[in-house]
Length: 298
Image 1 (spheres, one colour):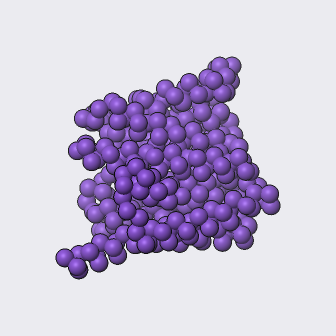
Image 2 (cartoon, helix red, strand yellow):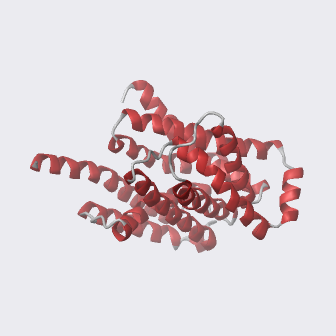
Image 3 (cartoon, one colour):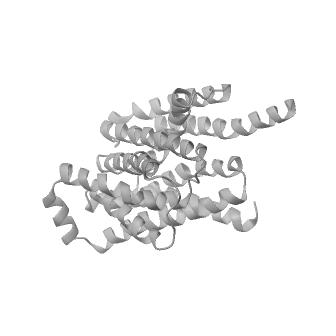
């Protein structure tokens, strides 16, 4: 990568890593499901002004919106609201890579390779080590479970994303923007049913500047700007070269949570973090090694 594109990659890592701190700030003053509705409404409104609707059938945009947008962030926002530390959330959410491997084998009939088995084992041990520390730390069991649910929803969205690409459509920023119109609806319905109309009205009437800045960051920085830059890198470099950048997101998330939220990680959680990161690294590098070996055979 050029120096400029390396800087862009670092900017993406920081935007998405710091995003977890912003979410933690947001759920202090806003109901999590309403915050999700406001985020995706703003993404849809702002993005639609500059990004044209992709030639993807609404059915597939709806599947994408319900899994990767609504499912992932409804669980993630609720997890942090229910006591999941932001730093650990940024790491545990990356277990989506493991669930994606499993779903790919189950639903797309893709074979699981040796390095992927190592990934699943390492990440599974790491998640177990983190999960059993809830009693001795500030992490709650429900927060951890909801974060795992968010990772599962993200993985389901990845499968939808692959199917969209396999059908000849481009799953790019246009999909992120226009599927937000769909994601806004279940967020609003869920907020109405779970958080109640009185809470919705009171939150909107009494919204503070810091809450508006949170929603703006989630919509513009984390969604529109982040995915725009990500799409730019993917169009200029192989996916195998760009994808490993996401390994830096939980590192930034944990550091930012420590600095801005004074979160403390226990020794056992650090061990779990190491195991998960090791598994993710094996998955990222293993794919590259596997391709090189196949190329040599040919």
